[in-house]
Image (tube, rainbow, N blue to C red; front, side):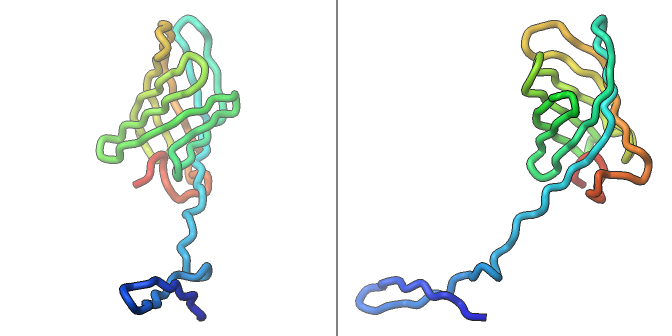
Length: 137
């Protein structure tokens, strides 16, 4: 492999320093997505279900009904939080109960009084192709 040389002037002489080539540069980890079904019930305002897609690389998420936001998971406590950046800015807080289920409560954070409960499930043996459960371990 041929290395490129960076020439740096040092005092009266020159110093040649080898630099990495494109072939030896590290590549970024591939994006990993965990897919689940998110079921929710807003107190007094109905219920529904949507696809949930957690990006384990940048900790963002999307839902099939237009939801977007950021999420975090603490493997020591099993706690998961999903903060939406649209709508009433709901914060979904809960617990990962198993590698395929999580559940908890949600509250609007925009000053409105919206609140309710939620659960997320994935079919046993699936993980969105990541080899991981809801949070990075």
